[in-house]
Image (cartoon, rainbow, N blue to C red; front, side):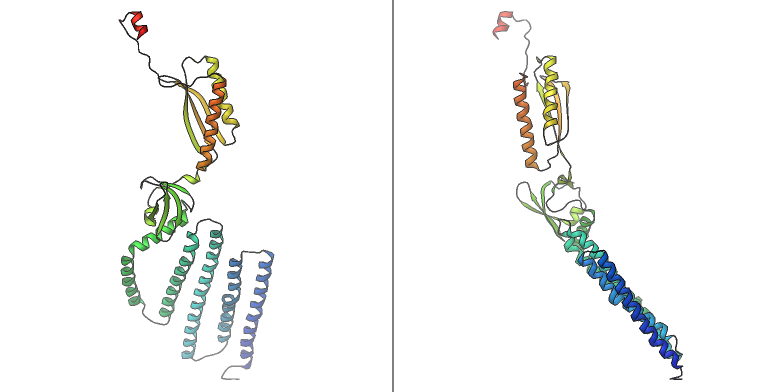
Length: 352
């Protein structure tokens, strides 16, 4: 007997500690082999290795200590103290593991963010990660204090009043930050996108998306800063995301055009549109008898979404239509008006 407990219990206690060390080393070895067999991004692999070290070791050693201590017969007062210490230690360890899992999730998010052009998520992820971990630790501290017998109700009331005051003082900043998060999650636009804010009357290219505002370079060359809360509540027409540019126009030919020439005009238009490299889809049909022309409606979907390339493609198509119509002697119509004079001698009407 030693201090009122059999000697074998002390041996079992150290045996449990040694078993925890062996199991921890084996699990780390298995984890390293897994990481070598399936290479992961450096940031994610680093967080996983961190989980295999301290958090996993802490769980195993703490469980071994708890099982070993329970082997001994302790006085009631000492047992209560030991129980409180272990509860606090388990709570701290649990919070630490949750924060490490949070780091893992944000590492995965960070790897995805690196593959995007926008810098907003690269700025928001570290801040959001830090805020969430602070919140987790705050909850953990409150749980530890409550387990130690402290009354946390008054503390929570004071924190609630203080948080309300801070929220009211920083209302604009918080709303803009939340708007930035909404843009990050929904991704209605990214840096470099050509967008139209019809409700705001702003058209231009996104130059930067910050935590407070989004900067847009307008078509006139000016730089406009739009608060993120306004961005989150407005309709964003992202022109850069369209797969094609639709170009719709009407070609009018004179009424004197024979039936065969109308068919030839349709054939020429369809041939030009079908053979041009910019064409994603097209339509060309004799649509209507206009006031002064026979109208052929043409719709061309250009797969070049860059505005400069679209204009060049449109110019090439228009020039080719002009050339082919001249070769086929098909006349374009222009606004004309025929006036019929009633009650006037034919000679005078002809002279008029």
